[in-house]
Image: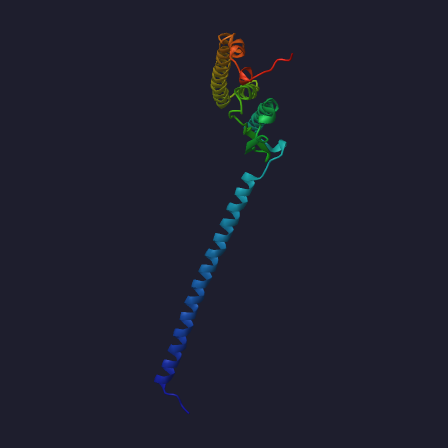
Length: 215
């Protein structure tokens, strides 16, 4: 069967059209693949650069500025730990827990303490005497470090006020106790000394009973 030239032309054009379309689609896919490859390389490169920047360095790899920072962090770490240890030792039984620290990572990848705190109970006791003793210990704990912080001084001031109030309560209690004893003493002093003797002079029922005499 012979195919007409028109049919052949359509057939060729159709295949040509299909081939061109496929070529364009393949070209676009190649471009997308290339773009994806480039992006992947950029992301990988960026990630490697970031890792290089955050990767801990050895002492020999530190530049002068980094070495200075590490020394400062080491000094700060020792200072903070000594500060909190002094608080904890002086607080004794009033400490509500151990020391906790805030850390900063140095260029060498190590964690250094740059801040800390020790929780401490600061409340009234069951008696003024107990409150006074507790507040004296709180003041000692707050001022124990060689360089108390502003927060330490505030705690010491609060404890001093509570101690002063407890002393005022104790003075008031002692005053009331003395007044009570004085009143009792005065009551005993002014009591009628003849009360018992007067009671003896009052005749009893036995005094009016009949009696007999023997011959």
